[in-house]
Image 1 (cartoon, rainbow, N blue to C red):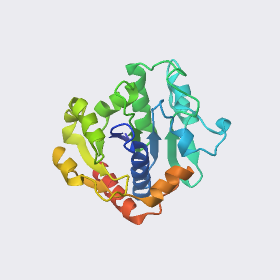
Image 2: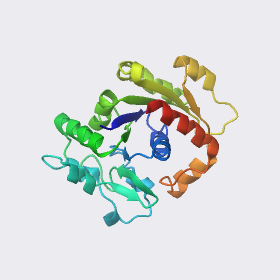
Image 3: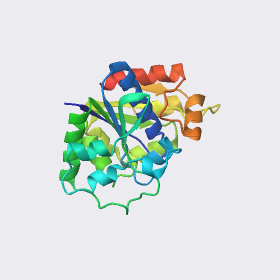
Image 4: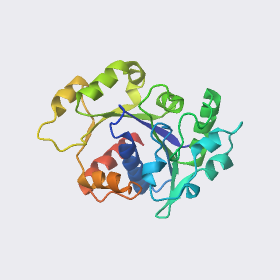
Amino acid sequence: MGKIIAVCGAPGSGKTTVALKVAEEIYYSKNGSVIFLSPDLNVPCLAFIFPNCKEEELYSVGVALDRTDIYREDILRQINHVKTMENFGFLGYKAGENVYSYPRPTEDKILNLFSLLRELADYVIIDCAGNADEIISSMAKSHSDRVIQLINPDLKCMAYYSSNAGMFELRAENRIKVMNIEDKDLFLPTSEVANHFKGVDFTLPFSKALKHQTITGTLSERLPDAKYRSVAAQIAKAVI
Protein backbone atom coordinates (compact mmCIF):
# COMPACT_ATOMS: atom_id res chain seq x y z
CA MET A 1 0.00 0.00 0.00
CA GLY A 2 1.46 3.32 -1.09
CA LYS A 3 2.12 6.36 1.07
CA ILE A 4 0.40 9.72 0.54
CA ILE A 5 2.42 12.91 1.11
CA ALA A 6 0.58 16.25 1.09
CA VAL A 7 2.43 19.49 0.29
CA CYS A 8 0.63 22.55 1.68
CA GLY A 9 1.26 26.26 1.77
CA ALA A 10 -0.04 29.72 1.07
CA PRO A 11 -1.23 30.62 -2.45
CA GLY A 12 1.78 31.47 -4.61
CA SER A 13 4.26 29.93 -2.18
CA GLY A 14 5.84 27.63 -4.77
CA LYS A 15 4.00 24.48 -3.69
CA THR A 16 3.87 22.93 -7.14
CA THR A 17 7.57 23.31 -7.86
CA VAL A 18 8.60 22.09 -4.41
CA ALA A 19 6.13 19.18 -4.47
CA LEU A 20 7.33 18.16 -7.92
CA LYS A 21 11.03 18.37 -7.09
CA VAL A 22 10.57 16.38 -3.87
CA ALA A 23 8.54 13.83 -5.84
CA GLU A 24 11.35 13.54 -8.37
CA GLU A 25 13.92 12.95 -5.63
CA ILE A 26 11.72 10.23 -4.14
CA TYR A 27 11.50 8.64 -7.58
CA TYR A 28 15.23 8.72 -8.27
CA SER A 29 16.31 7.68 -4.76
CA LYS A 30 13.81 4.87 -4.09
CA ASN A 31 13.38 3.45 -7.60
CA GLY A 32 9.68 3.05 -6.82
CA SER A 33 6.56 4.23 -8.58
CA VAL A 34 5.39 7.80 -7.96
CA ILE A 35 2.19 9.66 -8.81
CA PHE A 36 2.14 13.45 -8.62
CA LEU A 37 -1.39 14.82 -8.17
CA SER A 38 -2.36 18.49 -8.40
CA PRO A 39 -6.11 19.06 -7.85
CA ASP A 40 -5.95 22.86 -8.25
CA LEU A 41 -8.53 24.05 -10.78
CA ASN A 42 -7.70 27.74 -10.31
CA VAL A 43 -4.27 27.16 -11.89
CA PRO A 44 -4.32 23.81 -13.76
CA CYS A 45 -0.84 22.32 -13.36
CA LEU A 46 -0.64 20.53 -16.71
CA ALA A 47 -0.83 23.91 -18.44
CA PHE A 48 2.61 24.90 -17.15
CA ILE A 49 4.25 21.51 -16.55
CA PHE A 50 3.56 20.48 -20.16
CA PRO A 51 3.10 23.82 -21.97
CA ASN A 52 4.36 22.47 -25.29
CA CYS A 53 1.95 19.54 -25.47
CA LYS A 54 -1.21 19.73 -27.55
CA GLU A 55 -4.53 19.45 -25.71
CA GLU A 56 -5.26 16.02 -27.19
CA GLU A 57 -1.90 14.74 -25.90
CA LEU A 58 -2.83 15.38 -22.26
CA TYR A 59 -5.32 13.72 -19.93
CA SER A 60 -7.36 15.25 -17.11
CA VAL A 61 -8.02 13.80 -13.66
CA GLY A 62 -11.41 15.52 -13.91
CA VAL A 63 -12.53 12.90 -16.43
CA ALA A 64 -11.87 10.12 -13.91
CA LEU A 65 -13.56 12.02 -11.08
CA ASP A 66 -16.58 12.72 -13.29
CA ARG A 67 -17.46 9.03 -13.42
CA THR A 68 -20.11 7.63 -11.09
CA ASP A 69 -17.66 5.05 -9.77
CA ILE A 70 -13.88 5.25 -10.15
CA TYR A 71 -11.80 2.18 -10.97
CA ARG A 72 -8.07 1.65 -11.44
CA GLU A 73 -8.43 1.76 -15.22
CA ASP A 74 -10.13 5.16 -15.06
CA ILE A 75 -7.14 6.64 -13.24
CA LEU A 76 -4.57 4.88 -15.39
CA ARG A 77 -6.16 6.33 -18.52
CA GLN A 78 -5.77 9.88 -17.18
CA ILE A 79 -2.14 9.69 -16.05
CA ASN A 80 0.37 11.74 -18.03
CA HIS A 81 3.95 10.53 -18.51
CA VAL A 82 7.34 11.70 -19.71
CA LYS A 83 9.60 9.33 -21.63
CA THR A 84 12.55 9.67 -19.25
CA MET A 85 10.56 8.66 -16.13
CA GLU A 86 9.02 5.24 -16.64
CA ASN A 87 7.17 4.85 -13.32
CA PHE A 88 6.34 8.49 -12.65
CA GLY A 89 2.85 9.74 -13.46
CA PHE A 90 1.25 13.20 -13.48
CA LEU A 91 -2.41 13.69 -12.56
CA GLY A 92 -3.98 17.12 -12.86
CA TYR A 93 -6.18 19.43 -14.86
CA LYS A 94 -5.58 20.81 -18.35
CA ALA A 95 -5.45 24.37 -19.62
CA GLY A 96 -8.93 25.77 -20.10
CA GLU A 97 -10.49 23.70 -17.32
CA ASN A 98 -11.84 25.46 -14.25
CA VAL A 99 -14.13 24.96 -11.25
CA TYR A 100 -17.14 24.87 -13.59
CA SER A 101 -15.76 22.14 -15.85
CA TYR A 102 -16.73 19.21 -13.60
CA PRO A 103 -19.15 18.61 -10.72
CA ARG A 104 -17.67 18.90 -7.24
CA PRO A 105 -16.61 15.36 -6.18
CA THR A 106 -18.11 13.81 -3.06
CA GLU A 107 -16.05 12.82 -0.03
CA ASP A 108 -16.70 9.13 -0.71
CA LYS A 109 -15.39 9.50 -4.25
CA ILE A 110 -12.24 11.25 -3.02
CA LEU A 111 -11.59 8.55 -0.42
CA ASN A 112 -11.94 5.99 -3.20
CA LEU A 113 -9.48 8.00 -5.30
CA PHE A 114 -6.94 8.01 -2.44
CA SER A 115 -7.37 4.27 -1.94
CA LEU A 116 -6.81 3.55 -5.64
CA LEU A 117 -3.78 5.85 -5.80
CA ARG A 118 -2.23 3.97 -2.86
CA GLU A 119 -2.70 0.74 -4.82
CA LEU A 120 -1.23 2.16 -8.02
CA ALA A 121 1.92 3.80 -6.67
CA ASP A 122 4.46 3.43 -3.89
CA TYR A 123 4.32 7.18 -3.24
CA VAL A 124 1.59 9.71 -4.00
CA ILE A 125 2.57 13.37 -3.70
CA ILE A 126 -0.41 15.74 -3.57
CA ASP A 127 0.21 19.39 -4.44
CA CYS A 128 -2.56 20.89 -2.30
CA ALA A 129 -4.33 24.01 -3.49
CA GLY A 130 -3.98 27.09 -1.30
CA ASN A 131 -7.73 27.77 -1.11
CA ALA A 132 -9.38 25.99 1.81
CA ASP A 133 -12.56 25.11 -0.12
CA GLU A 134 -10.79 22.78 -2.58
CA ILE A 135 -12.09 19.48 -1.24
CA ILE A 136 -9.39 17.09 -2.52
CA SER A 137 -6.65 19.24 -1.00
CA SER A 138 -8.57 19.65 2.24
CA MET A 139 -9.06 15.89 2.59
CA ALA A 140 -5.46 15.18 1.58
CA LYS A 141 -4.23 17.13 4.60
CA SER A 142 -6.19 14.89 6.97
CA HIS A 143 -5.73 11.55 5.16
CA SER A 144 -2.08 11.76 4.17
CA ASP A 145 0.72 9.89 5.91
CA ARG A 146 3.00 12.94 6.02
CA VAL A 147 2.46 16.67 5.50
CA ILE A 148 5.07 19.08 4.16
CA GLN A 149 4.20 22.55 5.42
CA LEU A 150 5.76 25.06 3.06
CA ILE A 151 6.85 28.34 4.65
CA ASN A 152 7.94 31.51 2.87
CA PRO A 153 9.90 34.25 4.66
CA ASP A 154 7.25 36.94 4.22
CA LEU A 155 4.21 38.45 5.92
CA LYS A 156 1.77 36.91 3.42
CA CYS A 157 2.76 33.42 4.52
CA MET A 158 2.41 34.31 8.19
CA ALA A 159 -1.04 35.80 7.55
CA TYR A 160 -2.15 32.67 5.69
CA TYR A 161 -1.13 30.31 8.48
CA SER A 162 -2.58 32.50 11.21
CA SER A 163 -5.95 32.13 9.47
CA ASN A 164 -5.57 28.38 8.86
CA ALA A 165 -3.65 27.30 11.95
CA GLY A 166 -6.17 24.70 13.06
CA MET A 167 -5.85 22.39 10.07
CA PHE A 168 -2.08 22.15 10.49
CA GLU A 169 -1.94 21.77 14.27
CA LEU A 170 -4.06 18.63 13.97
CA ARG A 171 -1.27 16.98 11.94
CA ALA A 172 1.65 18.31 13.97
CA GLU A 173 3.07 14.84 14.68
CA ASN A 174 3.26 13.95 10.95
CA ARG A 175 4.36 17.34 9.67
CA ILE A 176 7.70 18.75 8.59
CA LYS A 177 8.28 22.46 8.05
CA VAL A 178 10.17 23.54 4.94
CA MET A 179 11.21 27.12 4.26
CA ASN A 180 11.22 27.94 0.56
CA ILE A 181 13.51 30.77 -0.60
CA GLU A 182 12.13 31.94 -3.94
CA ASP A 183 13.96 35.25 -4.27
CA LYS A 184 17.57 36.36 -4.03
CA ASP A 185 16.98 39.55 -2.08
CA LEU A 186 19.59 41.27 0.07
CA PHE A 187 17.42 40.74 3.14
CA LEU A 188 14.84 38.11 3.90
CA PRO A 189 13.52 37.72 7.48
CA THR A 190 14.30 33.99 7.53
CA SER A 191 15.24 33.76 11.21
CA GLU A 192 12.30 35.90 12.30
CA VAL A 193 9.83 33.78 10.33
CA ALA A 194 11.45 30.55 11.56
CA ASN A 195 11.04 31.77 15.14
CA HIS A 196 7.40 32.62 14.44
CA PHE A 197 6.76 29.05 13.29
CA LYS A 198 8.79 27.60 16.19
CA GLY A 199 11.49 26.20 14.00
CA VAL A 200 12.05 24.98 10.43
CA ASP A 201 13.23 21.48 9.56
CA PHE A 202 14.68 22.24 6.12
CA THR A 203 15.43 25.33 4.03
CA LEU A 204 15.32 25.10 0.25
CA PRO A 205 17.77 27.62 -1.22
CA PHE A 206 17.02 29.98 -4.07
CA SER A 207 17.67 28.17 -7.36
CA LYS A 208 18.25 30.06 -10.57
CA ALA A 209 17.96 26.77 -12.47
CA LEU A 210 14.54 26.11 -10.95
CA LYS A 211 13.36 29.59 -11.88
CA HIS A 212 14.56 28.90 -15.42
CA GLN A 213 12.57 25.64 -15.53
CA THR A 214 9.46 27.45 -14.32
CA ILE A 215 9.80 30.13 -17.00
CA THR A 216 10.65 27.75 -19.86
CA GLY A 217 8.07 25.06 -19.01
CA THR A 218 10.62 22.34 -18.28
CA LEU A 219 9.61 21.47 -14.71
CA SER A 220 9.18 17.81 -15.67
CA GLU A 221 12.95 17.57 -16.19
CA ARG A 222 15.31 16.78 -13.32
CA LEU A 223 16.83 19.91 -11.83
CA PRO A 224 20.57 20.39 -12.59
CA ASP A 225 21.08 22.39 -9.36
CA ALA A 226 22.93 19.96 -7.06
CA LYS A 227 22.60 22.17 -3.96
CA TYR A 228 18.82 22.43 -4.27
CA ARG A 229 18.50 18.74 -5.12
CA SER A 230 20.51 17.81 -2.03
CA VAL A 231 18.01 19.53 0.27
CA ALA A 232 15.05 18.14 -1.71
CA ALA A 233 16.54 14.66 -1.29
CA GLN A 234 16.79 15.20 2.49
CA ILE A 235 13.12 16.21 2.57
CA ALA A 236 12.23 13.16 0.49
CA LYS A 237 14.09 10.91 2.92
CA ALA A 238 12.30 12.52 5.89
CA VAL A 239 8.80 11.96 4.51
CA ILE A 240 9.18 8.42 3.25
